[in-house]
Length: 433
Ligand code: URA
Image 1 (cartoon, rainbow, N blue to C red):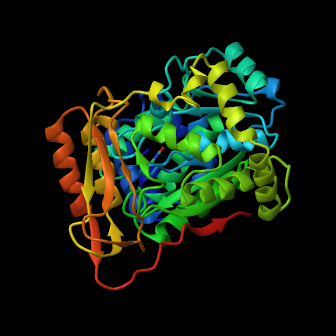
Image 2 (image 1 turned 180 degrees about the vertical axis):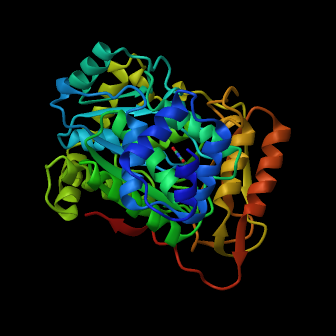
């Protein structure tokens, strides 16, 4: 291990055997934390070759259980977002892509910090179950065309241990380490075709475009080297996606979007990612063709029917589609208004995510309880012209004090200036091989 650290520190290559020795040794407790931490810091400063990054990914995959899906024809198209504020894309994208004829079996996680998790959002639907066993999962996919479950089994134990170590040694922000961490989990869950949404901006993990692009390229490269065709879109997270931030509120917005009347940015992002998924599933050859298939499915009203079928197959109450008041409702709602007239020049997306989290919509610690009804609807986007007193947001929460203080914070998180501003572009780059 000493030699491996030295070689990495000096920017020399590592062999497949060295990487496997290190990852297996660390997972099984033979390599101590201090040596692994030193190695992570060496990678942080020196980087890692693309070959070594792919080897690292596969060594992590092989540290635990690896799922295969022969029942689903062995070809599993998966999607992953690096996380953003108001990112309810999965809820919309999967039924929409299923409506265009692709079977979807997805494992999702819970949220932590200022970004939400798909399982939390779906748990706002009364009765919805993610703890399906394998037979039930496959049956749900057969019945509804798609199913979403929580992660089960002992997938990528090396990443669990390594991520916890990186978290306390200031080595999370290393592109090869992030890329291998994300891709190892997708591959271990059985994905053979992968579409990535790499978010960049104030509400995202990656703050600048060049790092986000490099992360996207690194993950696409891992996919290519390991035989999992991967495409990434780099997309804007300098303002929340759509309007809703908070679990039940996001389900409502997803339903509207699946009915064709959702916010423009969310709809557009789902069309772009969905088109990529259709290419990966070999249903379309170009993004334009993929979009057309998705638009045709929407014209026939199919996406919301897939969502209804998924809810029913997973034990949830599909009446939430027609009767959204069956979703958890917050007792208090207040409006945040524009303190002056002007143009929206900036929205602090991270602050909006933190406000929603503190209202109860997200968790600070992994074992925190969340309030499914809490959150906010942000009604403005960068580029909008506002009049003084115009409603900028509606805030939902358990008590007047917290909702009132959240509304004041939202007013401060939205910057208004006197001269016109441009709307933000949504899709910043596409990376594929
Ligand atoms: N998300 C992950 O899954 N892993 C990382 O290293 C960073 C973000």
